[in-house]
Length: 124
Image (cartoon, rainbow, N blue to C red):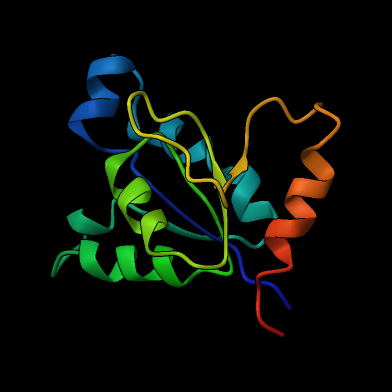
């Protein structure tokens, strides 16, 4: 059985600067779709009592069977260490590695075969 985990932030300076006036309650509600699908959420782990562990999260990313990265340095650097399947979205100046699947333009004819090739690197 596959496990799905999502790391994100809802109470950060970044969110507050790009979504002024949006409260924590509204931000948390935006993750309900994940909760409804039994996805394990790691939201603002660094703000929890005792703090989170960014290194632990990065190790989880690097060891994931399938890593779908966001436009963030943390997920990109972790993806560099992932030898299984990485789905990439454009990272400004950060290049896509040849083994990674382009996670944009999913309607292209080669997407399905690229993803199957990526998934084939997951050990049984």
